[in-house]
Length: 242
Image (cartoon, rainbow, N blue to C red; front, side, top):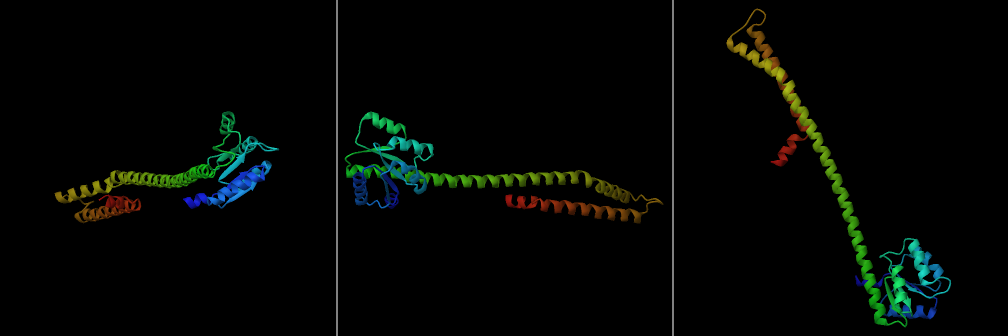
């Protein structure tokens, strides 16, 4: 993680070249390698939009645009977020200046003249926050994807269950209505046969033939029910449950 912090892109904005050089040297001594600089506050918005620095070190008192004006521009562009904190560079350490800078979106202060240890600690602390926020964002995005995937799985599972319920209703209807007719006819014929009752219109051979036909019809209906049950995966689910 230290390497990630040291490779972070840092933009230094100060109208005084000497101040920029001091900060560049201080950062280089501490191992920071990705430094961008500008002595024109009017260029900051474009630099921030195109190069996307992880941090801006921003002077307050500058010609053309003050540091406050620059923060206004960044805020209007939607760039003033925790993913690009601003450390204000100022020789004015008054409460009023600090309150104004903080209310406008600054995250911290570096007071001129700069102290090497203070520069390192304040920058690293804020960059660490950026790093942790980035990791949290990635984690949340991955979690959101997993939630969506799980939701789709549940929807598909629910649709499958509903389809099986419809198939079961259909099977139940077949059992209670379609099976009843040949079964009742079969039972009646068996009863006639057992009683030894026959007539000129319905001989014993006729009764046996009708029994055979009814049995075959009943067998076809049962096969159809079984097929529908397999197609709806009813048997498969029951096997898995056991």
